[in-house]
Amino acid sequence: MTQYLLDTNVVIDLIRGKDNNVRQHILEVGVDRCAICDLTAFELLYGAYKSQNREQNLRLVHTLIDQIAVLPSSSAYELAAREKVRLQQAGHPIEDFDLLIGCTAIINHRTLVSNNLRHLSSLTDLTLTDWQ
Image 1: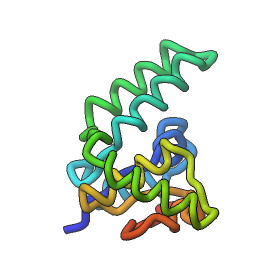
Image 2: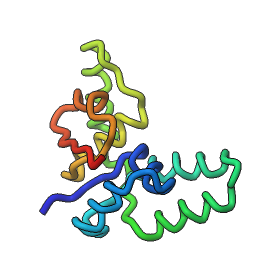
Image 3: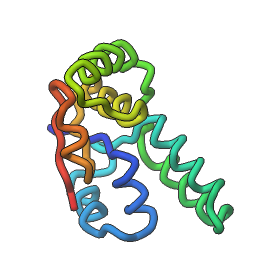
Image 4: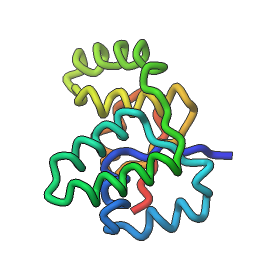
């Protein structure tokens, strides 16, 4: 049964209510088969603290974090380091958080749900899908 890791951009759209397709997919597959990376949790919290509606956005982020599994990126450090070197040598560098989120999906045998397929498709052995 496929397990999913939700990329930060997908979760932001979900929290903002911008993407009903993602919400529908989560309902169809079940929240128990979905997770986020700890770096996504950090990015969401950072965005909430930076926002105009800090308290409301913090409540939304904390509600999400309480309802979905949060996977540690530390399990992917070695793979991410190898991939970073490979991608730099190939002339296709990826930002560190994107790299670590993608490698967290690989290490945990999860399909990464993202709306940034082109950017992440250069990661070796990463399975990607776009629920939008």
